[in-house]
Length: 269
Image (cartoon, rainbow, N blue to C red; front, side, top):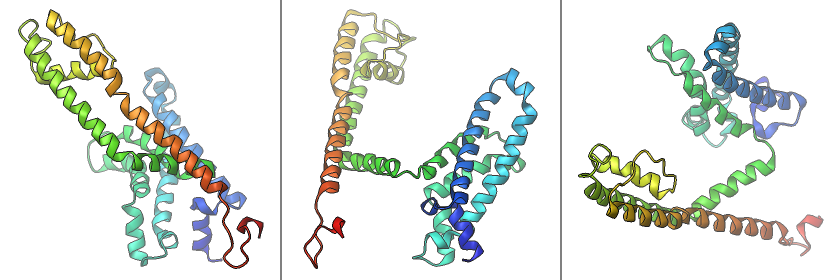
């Protein structure tokens, strides 16, 4: 086997058969988690002051590993995308979702050398790289199931979002006209009233902005009650579709697939 193929097998999630493959995947997973933990700990001034050097070494080591991995993935992209020419395969990886995530995971380190900007927070996106390391079938199947659920309910959810948006704008406009004169500082414009509408319609109710007039209180109560039903609609739609998708997958899994040659169950072959 060629060296390039061996290296590709080390980083390819579908080729995790040897101990070396498994070690590489777990090593990168652990490094990603360590980076995210370090990012949070750096936000504490006392911890950052005591362990600043350690955080720096973690960052340097991580950047070296992630940069090498990114370059290797570009180098071996034609082994992953075999249906296109090598240069197109490399471009396909670079502009793919995971390719962009891989780039973002190292870009915040290099950018300050060219642009005076602090992008350390973007390192949290390294966590998304864990998605490609979830090799267990049940994880990948669950992800596919969720995607299928959203595809099936896309039109229903869009209708619900449209209704909620319409209700938000209507509520904010009415409340602005009712409360503006009584408390101009709280309901200075429809934009400010929109914040109140979002907090009330979602039944969160922060309490920083609230009506003081009688009509305003009545309207606020009506909107809060509507919010309980309308905002909960997407949850019901998605839950129903999720159950249907699970039942469909179970039936598909338990269905008997007959061999076209002998007529017996293929699983028995």
